[in-house]
Amino acid sequence: MKRIGLVFALVFSLLVPTSGSAVAAVTWSQTSKLDVAFDGTFYNPQYDLQYSSAYIFDNETDEIFFYLDFLQVPTVIMFNDDKNSFGSINLDYDFDGDADVSLYTELLDLNTSHVAVDGLAYNRVTEKLLDCPVRVFADIENQSKWVGFRVSRSCLNLPNSFDLNGYAQFNPLNRDDSFDFAPYLGFEVTLPTASAGSGTSSSTAEASGATYALPSNKLNSSTSANAYSDSPVDLSKLSETLLPSVVTVKCLTGSGTGWSADASLSSSMQSAGFLSLVLTNHHVITDCLGTKSVTLTLSNGTSASGTIVSWNEDLDLAGIAVKTSIPSLQWIGPRPKQGWWVGVLGSPLGTSGILTTGIISSVNSITETFTFTAAINPGNSGGPVFDSTGRVLGLATSKRLISADTIAEGFGSAQGTPLLCSVIILCTLEKTPWGATPKFSAGPSASELALANAAKIAQDKAVADAKAVAEAAAKIAQDKAVADAKAVAEAAAKIAQDKANAESRLISEQLARLQGDYSTLSENFSSNLSKYTEAMAQVSFLQNILKTLQIQVEELLKPKPETIVCTKGSVFKIVKSIAPKCPVGYKKK
Image (cartoon, rainbow, N blue to C red; front, side, top):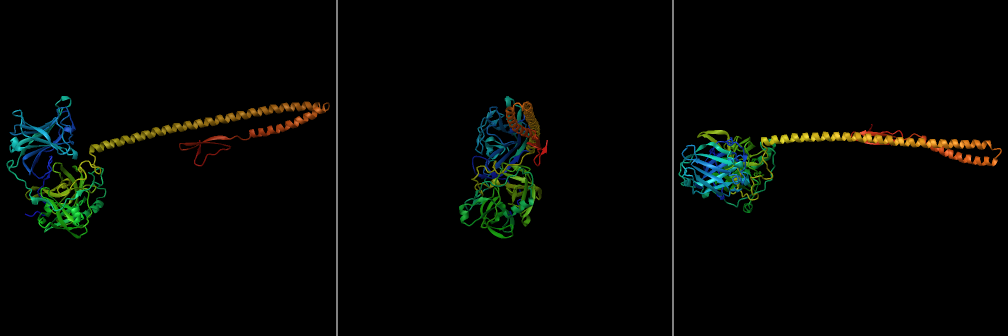
């Protein structure tokens, strides 16, 4: 049966999180409900479990993978901290409420990127270790919050149905009161009916392939946002910017959506004349794999021929090379979070350029898929699901079915862009492109915003207090400076007045003495002419001195300079002159 447009059944797929690099598809999985309670009395968020889950992949049918999903990203030493801390998967075969087998890890360091370490399998009925290899792995490097356990189903004699729960324990001060279950009473797991080891891989040579050397990713250079939960500042402008990168993909009688990805084409693709790489879902181009040819309708209404150059059925992804230059979209950054705003552009029901919006409703960091509430319909398949900055987070892929003929609205699913790596694009330039890359940072949580607001209030208060203290200190300094300047001016004026008064008294005394001498000489003039003449000469001399003294007295008696203090705000000036005036803009204090 042809699969054109939007596939309604949910597609799960991922890169197997072990030391191997094989691509595998999830054939079965079960996940517990969210566990929000911390069961121990001594709370430690590092050991707070949210979910436990089980997965089976198509290329390892006897292997079963269990996951502990934590509130925070695990640390390398969280199970090797000298406090007997450990994590475990507990399996209750007979539903009696007591675990029969536990897979656990303790006294060992986790690796940061998929490389597995040895765990243990313990039979809690016989109280003996089982000779079943248990591989424990994590993806701390990419900020994934899970720890995985891989083990053989047949070695564990795992029944088709059993109860499962996860457990993590932290022992501060050797007390056993800091622990958490997820979920507390466990949840029932029912394995697929096929017996362990009997399944075969659904992948064939035709299901995955490439006709040219794969293009490579470019370093992340897109715009960051303070809070990805907020809608774009100008959605109309953002949509207008993104639309030229979105195309309608036509394959025979069906159609879907594609978008031009920011990537460096390989030399073989460039030699063939290709200029752009368009990404879409595999199910959009399935019926054209024989010819490898599709038709693209660009946003301006023109058509271009596309060549299918890479495809992967398990991951539901495909790459189409085009000999037309199409503006590209950014697609590398950290993994999205629940609650982020998202937009979807595509060609639902064959109508191009349709925009819908919503939020991310759930994120599966194991499968690199997420669900969202923006409306999608047949024809949206392969279209970009983008964040508030225009970065593509994933490809719109499917809608959830309620029943065989009932579709759940507001329950779209997307293949996250990390799934493109290795099968459509070689992601080699950034070692962990979906980790904490420089250009992207997730928006702050409510608690982080509250702390930031509190810090801002405290900072504003500190600035206001400091300003008030500074203004008070400046006022005190200004008042003191004005008082000091006034005191100095008054002291200088008094000294000058006292000096003038002393000099005036001395001149008056000298004049009185000279006048007495003149009277005496006048009385004796007739009898002592020579003395008179001499006296007259002296008088003339003294008169000259007197004139000089009078001039000096007059100079001393002239108006004296005054000193005033002029202010302009917190600035002041001292002005000293006869009839002094303040400069323009200053006022006399």
